[in-house]
Length: 93
Image (cartoon, helix red, strand yellow):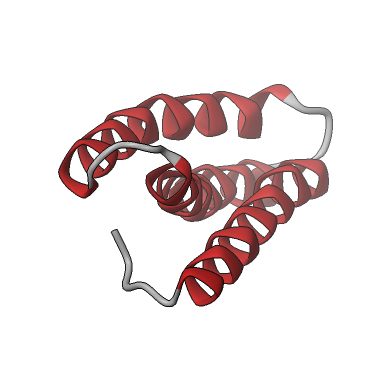
């Protein structure tokens, strides 16, 4: 029971952070505005994503589902954004 709560806390903190950073990177790459506006918009959206990830970690049935539900979208978002950045030949936003 205690290990389940600790695992959910770690999933919320670390997995939520990874998801919010990967999502904000993806949004920053995909927005068709200048770099400064895309960065500010992406960083503001990252607060919403992090809050949702935190709620997700404690709302699912098992801690394994919390980890996979946060890390799989984070890896997919990061992979898409790095693929787009490599294809564009540009630097990070």
